[in-house]
Length: 414
Image (spheres, rainbow, N blue to C red):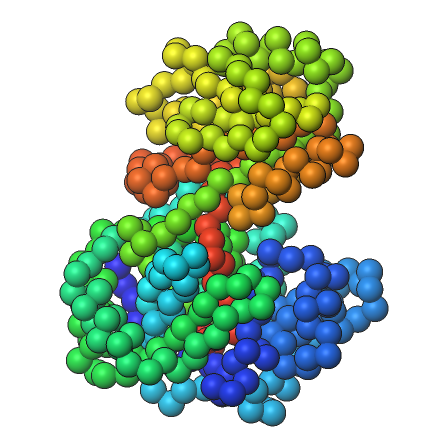
């Protein structure tokens, strides 16, 4: 895999907590407006610049993208963001529930993305891709990193440990997620060269989170290459910013489903139809969480149920067919509830497991939703097996936590 160090654009130590933000796609415009209130240094003014316009302004309006550029320039002019003088790597650690994962912030190769060496496991939507392409293009920068998994490497772990035993450049606990975020600079030339060599020997990198940002960054890089009559291949636009975590350190949590109605069925008729393909056990009012593959929990009418897929309803040798998200989509959402397309059907909603199963129960009890379905999380091995075989997971399969904070470092395409 081809990676390179870069001259990061980042906030001074004393401003990092003011500048940093959650990723653009985990909150809506009003939530961003509320989080940035009274803070002119918040990165939301660059990644969600619609907050600088009256509520209801279309976030895809050309003037909104122009505002992002204006704000990015302002941040640099005022010294809220400044570019490092040297090309270097960075280490970004996240601590959640006492567990820390250590990522290397690198520039990944557009060519590796285009040729499939950087592996995907999800389809992207053209509208979301185009939105992020405009953002990269107009700012001439990767403002937010993407989240990669990489094979573990003991020598890289040793280099990282050498830096993380020292004083970090940034160290804060984010108010919005309660997780600790720590950041160091890898500036020794020998370490930079060795990390580059060790990555060169890796067979693949895997997109964990940020498929739209990866696609947008790579497509803009390829576009710039086509437009440059003197293109050489070593220009900065041939690379995009990613944080690479060893796959063994990552946590995938459940990604659950809520449905608005039972497709004309009564509760009893729906439960009866489930018994054709599942062993159904009533668990009562207390929250029930799936504990193994092919076990689901269902919340309906004030009760939780355990559903266990019957043998013969799935194929363990099929990397996609064996996934619980496939089993539930085919046997429950499609066959019984008539939901054919998870991407477009307005009767279904998705909730990351970080919010807990109590969130599912609350939304059903409120009458907003009729039924909730909780899934056992996908494993990292399932994800890499699927990516390695060129398959694509169904929509809304994986939820990685903690999310990367944005604004710790930015990559300029110049």
